[in-house]
Image (cartoon, rainbow, N blue to C red):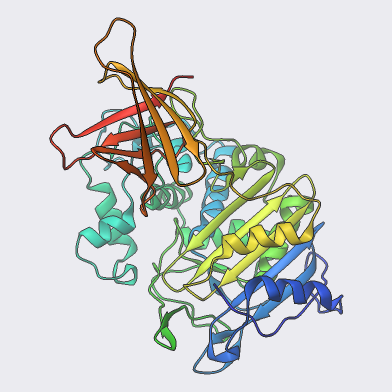
Length: 453
């Protein structure tokens, strides 16, 4: 977790964050939530809290560059990883509104060299991570590249486009894929006839006044006020500028001050966030059977996750950790940008929401496994009853007229999140609606169960 020793509290109008005194108590509470630091001998974070698109608190601590002892501030360019996904969808949404791209179009309409998969992959499937298109970062690793910086945009595109099949039947599952967002950026580039980074600068960043934010084009930012990424090593920190150097899934740098301008356009300006764009961006993703495209407690929309009333997204690279969240109904926003690979910005956002008070929680509820489940491959029902967080009682009962014996067993939670006992192993699904029984290494293999109650 990032540690802080200094804090600045600032108030701002939407177009520029200008320093102003504010009660030190809030800054002290934010500092207490995050801990202490080694000052400019350590990386850190920049955090802003907004109401009505005005900065009510800004806290920055730690070094953007440890060797130069240069501190982070509201204008420091910070690599934001997957926080950039929502900006990619903004570009796609503009082309949809202009009638140049269809959300339900087969992506081969724009990327004809893609294989003809068993089920067509649509633009919407790429947006909502339901396409089955494989993740480019993992493909790069499996192809032998040591770090993401070693892989060019062209090489990543070739790896993704050359896959003979998708990881699953398109539209039937949710599985987060950076490769899908790389393809979205390529669609923007081909349809607009403009390099993706240039399109983003002209049509997304410039209209909102985000003058210090941009998409990388093969090299890290050389700006005098740019942050390096770091990870802890021994008693100090190791330089970790190992992120991808092209856009789509990430590959962009932002500043706290520019995110203030972004928030203003979201709430008030509407130069980019027009009503038509907003509808596309905040439309929950769906699988082909109508179920939501979701993680536990969050549904994926247009490059953002919907968690109750909150709109949020994180971004993670080896040396950078980030989280942004908005509460549109209250016009509240929290931005946490860190150049410390050990930081936990998502937890910081949760703690800040608690600190502010009077807001709906952003914490994920503990998924419950309680319920009755069935498998198409076994003639029995499993009824799960959690006992605290670490024990699970399982009652097995035969289906009517079928073989099997009634039995109750007790399982204990293991370090990997599974529940185990003698000859039994249950691994809960991410959506909390099912589980896997057994082990691939055993003779019978895995059995899939889904909730039936």
